Amino acid sequence: MIFDQLKNANLYFPLSKRIQTAFEYLLNTNFETLEAGKYEIDGENIYAVIQNYDTKPITAGKWEAHKKYIDIQYIVSGKEKMGYSNPTKMIVTEEYNEEKDVMFLKGDGNFLIAEAGHFAVFFPTDVHMPGIAVNLSTPIKKVVVKVRVEENI
Image (cartoon, rainbow, N blue to C red; front, side, top):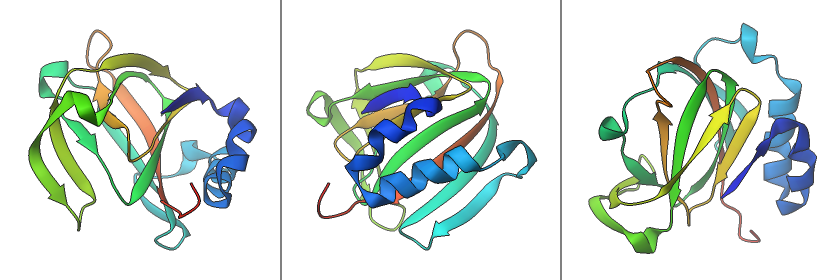
């Protein structure tokens, strides 16, 4: 898991060409003018999902993990808690769905507060819980860039 500000994204370019492409998209796109939806960057290898939602209480949150894709979750506006944990501290509650590339788990983890301009990178080894209210429910605009896992990561 990586947590940082978008202004430091170039530090992570060496991880892979796909991750670099994803960060360049985040750095060079004006999300204020884009509607919610899916945006192709490099076919199914890299795509962005722009979301607008209200944060939820932790009791409504779900721990999730992916196998095929890395999540780069970037906060455009608003503030939310993002949970993260190691899969060894979790119990699977819904088996992996290959079509949706997601499995759900329960257990304990840690939380960070992500504000506008911050991003978190969740690798397949990172269980995460996004969209949690800091105090009260607030509106969020977020971009999740899905980066297909490469052999050399």
